[in-house]
Length: 521
Image (cartoon, rainbow, N blue to C red; front, side, top):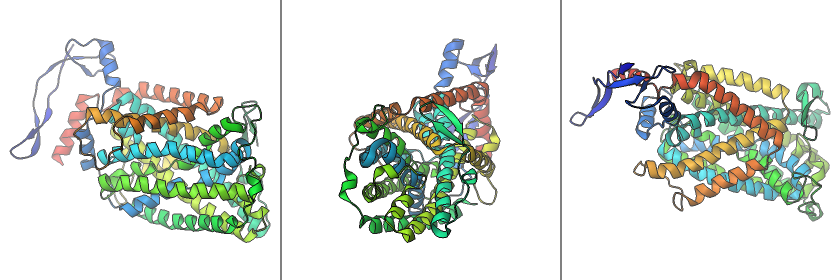
């Protein structure tokens, strides 16, 4: 069966204009997909090639130029969004829980190990963001390096970071909201209204019953400022009540299982508190809304990450030094710590700061997810309504409403430990592929402009970052790994039934139609 391509884009060097040139090329049409194959290409080779088709840097640049998103964010906005997206459940909730159940005061080492792993990813994100200023984060980067199938996998996987992440933070918000009423008014709200109706028993592996982008950035700046003031107040005020005996033993003896204290507990704790560093990559999801993305994105990513790492270490030292780590297994460990030393006034301030601060994290994670879906919709991998842009605010409003609704439902019914660990392993998988992507693009696009380069060449830092990501994934619980594989399997089914058949990169007629629309406009 024969087919023809009727046009292709050409550049006229004399006028710098782009036009469509009629070309007749004999092609075979695949019976399964209805799309053209190369002459002499077998069906299985054709389908394999389609799975690993990459988007060129040039086509990504064209997507950036054609974007209708409003470009209004400066480097300060990006840094505040980065800090706002990072400082959240990881330090307000999970650091205390990791200390109480896995690492003891050694949670400081867990924080540093998680930070080291994330720092390599931050460097890799900075290089790729300076090259590819497109909304979509690691989904877009993977499309440019490893091809469509892997890009789909990582795009589907990022749902665990942003959508599930927003749900996990909302659960943490509920914990501090409840403690605020206890500390301020002596009123204890029923757990039926503030906690998930389910908990996950790790022993039995079963569940048990129990507006516009600039305006969003301004709100994020306000709540981040409040959050930072509260955290520094906690460090300074509670730091005067640190007792050295609370640091002994610094790493409690292992209690017979991998994740229960000892060196392995510290490693397992690093996987849990890795959640604390998730968020800096949210900056890359709003690349197309930045005024100067090639320059500002690396500064914002590395700047926000450095500030947060210093804060985290200080908070963990004070938290485990004020009270025994055994008391910190609580939805609001910072409040537990300050109340235990009689600083009720500080507990009220911490509760207010946590509620406001976690609100900013929810906002920023729900800014990231719709933009990833928007990038996937622009590529034809999910329905087009996900890329609809609001005519006034210049934001993907339809998919924002949908993702916000789903996150709310998940937050109401799922416990924070399940959400947090699932989010962590999903993000670690994304970080692994971003590190690999830096190395690949150094060879496949060596001359592409880079405002920032990962130091040490294309192998050293990306390789270490990828290896550490895999190491932390390996320390996750078996049920979490199983959930990750189940989620990935569902994603592959969706891709097979929808995305692979409607991909614009692998459907030349769609590409020509898209190019024609751009030229006409």
